[in-house]
Image (cartoon, rainbow, N blue to C red; front, side, top):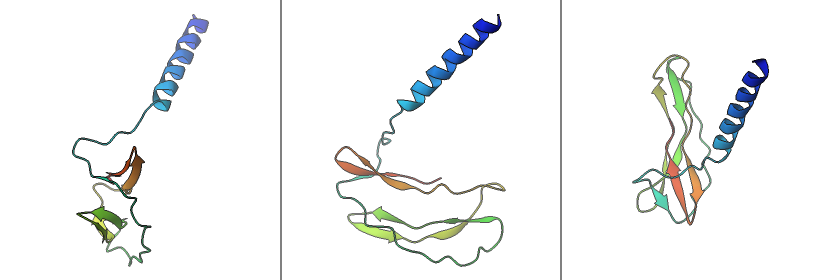
Length: 102
């Protein structure tokens, strides 16, 4: 019984590892796709947070018929201890795709 349980666990572990390794991130329908790479990120200086309930959302390059810098800002955390995962431009195929932060 113990050997069969170990075999099942090993098989599940392998299946999960293979499925994670084969994941490919694809842009969602309607995603922003741009033919040119974004400029380098700009350095930003953030002032002190308004309160411990705020989290810094860094600036990023946005595309609206050309590149423009969207400056960073403080926002309220959705729940205590929440952190911000920044968005990024990912190279996919022949273009760059925006993956929103959350």
